[in-house]
Length: 457
Image: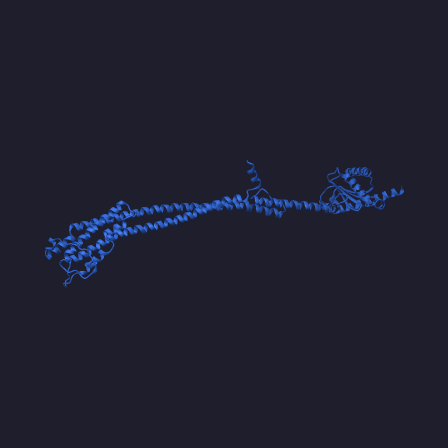
């Protein structure tokens, strides 16, 4: 494992190393989703355009057929019945024919519209053939109308007067009226006109069928693109959800859970783990633990100052009283020693308080040395020139050894200390305070003897 990875495992992953990759991925996904939405919108617009364009193409081709059909109907109506029963010219179908003929949906008009359009050669060929047939039919109809109007006077209509009727041949001009009417009728009902109409319908049907097929093919292609774009959009959406879930899990694992642990640890006053969560969370934990360590160290200093005698370094009276309250109801043996430094006042009066302080420190050293071999012994400065020692889980022989050591240490430290001791084999049968009183009484007796000896000397 590399050093950088070891440091990450120890110090945690910085928040930016988690946020940055997810931000980049989210930005990419967001951009991709926007691109897909725009793409779908463009493709949908393309679908509408395809339908509009090819519907227009089909409408144009159908218009050509519809116009040709209307010309056939009106021309047939006029040629078959050029005169009404009242003797007047049957001008209505003729005017209808002329009006329709002026509309821009003749065969050549339709061909011109398709020039340059994106249609296949086969479709264009069908349209041209249909246009040729439509023009042939219209030419036949104009020829028949010219023959009929050579007999009857044309109605006063601008549409009719604008018709470009063909010039009759000399043979046709020489025909009688009845012959002209028969020839005109035969023209519009003849085999050539019939074949042209049939060819027109066939080519229009073929062109429209091909246009519909092309439109459907293009439409399906666009639909496939829409489907692909939607599939990508679904994938992007799923990835969004997956990454959101991943972020949620990471936040719970690297932030929420560690903080919950911190709260529990803080409530209990315990140190909190520095090896969980993001690097920033671990730094918070580390700072908190340092702060708690300093607080604990300060409390220890204050506690030590409150429970330790500054002159001798021994625990003070307050510490002793707290110590006495501990385990007082347990069944164990204990020896309670009470000491009083002799002649402290005389030393202070004659040699000064510095000498008195030195005497107290030597007395404390004397007592500490007496009990240093006992793990369950505790010495205290009770106050002034009084000291206390408590020896737990001891025997009477242990007490005797303490007295022997005490006498030796007095000589070494050049001090005179009165001593009193109270012993019990089961502390639950008495109390520490009773032992204190008993030891205090014995100590005063010993102190009186020490002073009497000095007076006798």
